[in-house]
Image (cartoon, rainbow, N blue to C red; front, side, top):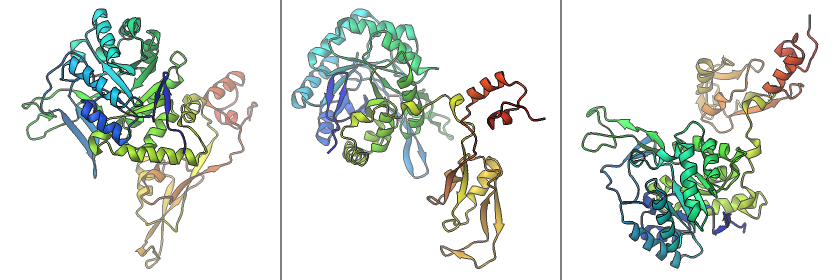
Length: 444
């Protein structure tokens, strides 16, 4: 079987699947149950001076039949004493020496306070330290969490304080609530961070009760901004992970977070630069057992790809992420509709006509023309010469593989926007169309 173990900053983990810091990692009881289920590691719910949480704490967005497509929370860090958390970390490491235990830390922005919590945590036996510079609510109002992670100088400074005394590798957890997360990752690296984890939750108000006018979740009829996570944030998290992976001033391991719910999600994060992946919302929704499918799915995927180790996947897609200006403007695809699979719903026609480029027409068919037992009156037809290859029709089509996007050989050379600008500078008399066609001589 392929080897799922990973090396993260010199720490060996049985597999890349870690529980993220949050409600599922609040106690030793939970984390030991998770390790029994198969999780390779866990990031302890953030440790600091105990706080008092509110009720209620969670709100969600549902999408049709899927519950908790997006989860909002106003829960803060651990409400249990620091000594209790550290004692339980020691208990977990004693029982599960091969599993990775990461201590998530957040204290006030004083050098001596950080030195103290780091020393105490390392004495408890944590394998890695994760500095929570990402919490967007509650703690940021106290000068911690995102209040640190949104200011490069603060992130560099506090990371530097930690590295003055830390003997174990230090991960900095980044907030997505910034203009350029890769810049913040570089700031953490400048402070001596050994790795980064991203993304933490997004600032959000999930919904408002239209009868009471109170935001959800509601605390006595009032609400506050919280942190948004779950499947809905995955595309943004993937972008941010790839941006950090490509940044020339970072180049340290990444632990990917954001909407991971199955092995496919995990593979996408790994391909874009993550060595480990952290899961929270999916574990809250479905329980710790989901890791079994993740492990089996990843093993089968690696076997199908002929790979012996998951480490072979790390960053494999990063070179394929390019600036828009480097994409080939002469690459062309068009839509093809399989008439044998079409059910005549005309969603492709409506989407193209109203929301895209008016490249589909509907042909009348005689009554009694049956396909799949359906009486079809209208069958969509692609105007291939006008199709711009936007993909919208294929995305809205409810029938698998009914609409496919097929590459067309234009006979033209690769020409990106940047190359086009260079060519314009050299041949100012040529039109853009002439330059795209590879000509450097204007037609008169």
